[in-house]
Image (cartoon, rainbow, N blue to C red; front, side, top):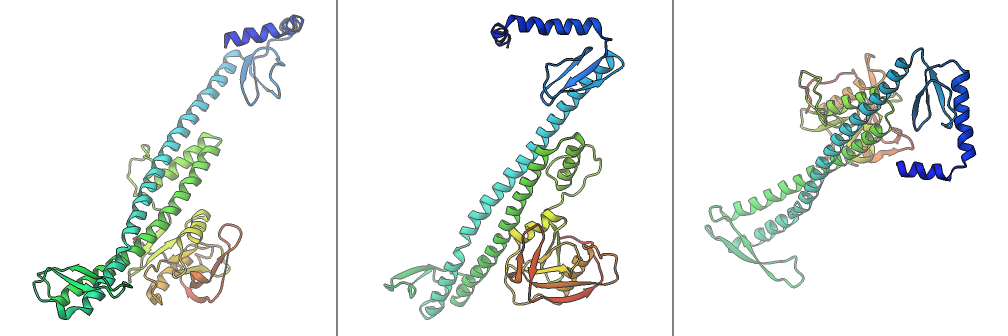
Amino acid sequence: NKKNNQSKLADTNTETVWLAFDQVRLEWLSTTKQPQIISNSERSIVTTIPLQQLEDATGQLFDTISEALYSHYKKIERQEIKQRQTQAILQAVKKHQKSVERKLYQLRADWKNADNADQFCKQGELLTANLHKIKSGQKKVEVIDYYDPDLKTQVLELKPELSPTQNTQRLFKLYNKAKRGKTVIQQLIADNEAELEIVEYYQLEVESAKTTDELLSIRAQLANRGWISDKQKSKKRNPTTIFRRYTSPEGFQIYVGRNNLENDLLLRKVAKSDDMWLHARQINGSHVIIRNPERKPGIPMPTLLMAAQLAAANCKAKHSSHVPIDYTWFKYVTKRRGIGFVHYTHQKTLNVEPKAPQILS
């Protein structure tokens, strides 16, 4: 830096340097010494005379040089604290991001493995067609593969302690289990992809925060989500998951968006065509989804009522005695431009009392 400054000085016209120095000297001799901080977007200088070196600079006057120095270094301290907080929060967000990405990697691998469901079904059908060939206690059986164009034979492993019929039932049970597992995995993949968007949202929030108070607010939100430890809190709180979640008496998962971001993620990332969508009619409020991974043709009325009450309890009319709640299959819901805006058809309406169950899933 010293060499660079000397080089710049050598390149500067001597007369120009002298004129600048003389201007400062005259200012010093002719003016009352007024402590002040001259600053622009790049730097700040504590001085007792007006300076012209900083472009687009503003000045702040003080009664004493001690006050000016205190304010100057206090500002530096605040900037350093903000920088440390920013780094700590971003580190916590990055750690959570890696955790979610690892989950997604494993879930996608599990989803591929769940493709064995079709293989279990095929083996069960081949075994059923060859039950007459199997004797109790047999460990394997060779059968013709009717799905093969060349009708090649295939050897199927058997449980010798099971009867031929029980071996067949076992394969179909494995098929149903793998099939159900695949739908659950798809649901978890959608949930974690939505979680990654929440991560990206908070990264932008932290990077754009201008004050320490804004960072503290973000930190509190992340602590509530369980992404970062909150040492200032003496009581432990259960971390919140993305979306507010409930389980109906019939075992259906119900998701409720808590804010515009979560409502948007429900619509874009999570909800599937066979899920049921609910929303207060012509009233601002949360979007509610009843998950239906098994693609059942209908949702039981107790589950619908529970979800409708949640939609009513999370809208602007939540203090009314009754709220009209529209519901329809999500395949009839079209997202419009803007967060949370939709168009929907084939809807029915329930008039319900706003009520939020106390027990989360």
